Image (cartoon, rainbow, N blue to C red):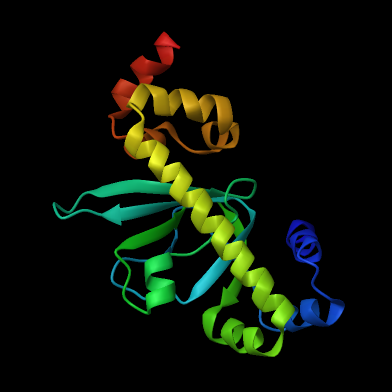
Length: 189
């Protein structure tokens, strides 16, 4: 919880602002492999990871799942399903835990009410959303433009937390190769 409060303080939130947020948040323990946002459901929360990790998976037209993002306490710790959260539509993605995790839950309805009360929280919220969306866009752009080998090399060089905390199965799915191909790729590097 200290990391969350450090981020709030870096955002220049006052003690009153922090108290407002404390009034709406709750800490939730999420067991391994539990879905917190499922396909066809509305995403009504923003989550901040205190401990653990999650993957975001997209349901493809053929019924298969594609891992499209990772969330860890030290890598993109704020998570939501943006299309569902911001547009109030059902989700075509799911968020699933990859280990026992603890998250702070920020419910949308209450958060929007607080944004009307505090311009400082509103500025902080907008700044965090922009930062998270740009980070996600940058990550996905690399995924689309790099070969699987180059993407894996990038993960090794720049995203060690992903390499250390995400299973090879999810990494392989993310970069668009089979787990066997990833295993062979690891042997050549």
